[in-house]
Length: 273
Image 1 (tube, rainbow, N blue to C red):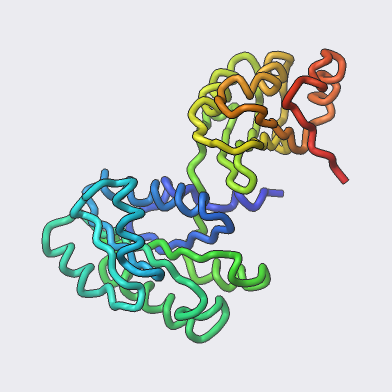
Image 2: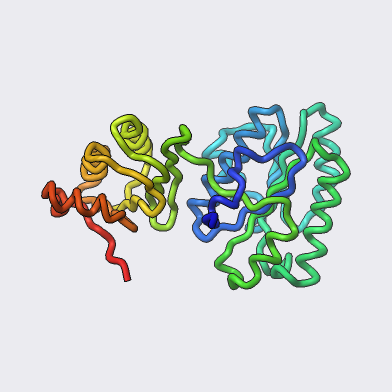
């Protein structure tokens, strides 16, 4: 059975003309996905329209901190009508338009309601009128509605996106985690793929006191891989940081115990059950 994350589309795999949703439960997840969505559009020669719920000035400051003062990015109030801005951008010769909307429950309605349907219908018509030159990503904070409304959200979009993988060579896949911060490993961790984990840990810009390594999808791990897990703290300047090993496979736990690494400083095996 596929894991829920595997049924989602990586944001970097979105195609021109897609109308997708970003359903997140942590701001860091939203920021990572939105950063990739905007950068991909800018690299493709697209204009970016950001419809901000909390006010254009706040969104402008947040975007400027990441992308600089780029005049290809336009921030509008979410209550406005983006159709004129889309047409204007296309007339100015941009290859396409990346449209993203902060779709909170208050003005848009919760998934499954008439207001929600009307809003999503309007976005769908806008994308359809200019497809494939307009690509839309609707942002939804999962903390504002219960899980039972998620199917109603997903069925109104062509895809639900997730963050891009940090690494994937067909043998080992490394995906980011956001709550808690960390990495999820899938596939094989051995001497050949260990450098990828070391690089991912080095590039992980986290000042958190705890870092989670989710091993629930690890098919195989040799002794070198186990050593790499134990030494994960070498890449950080955070004092006394703990590495939480989640869903540790039995073979890995056995190697940790036999080698004596199970009690290494800073390594914690998350309790199950």
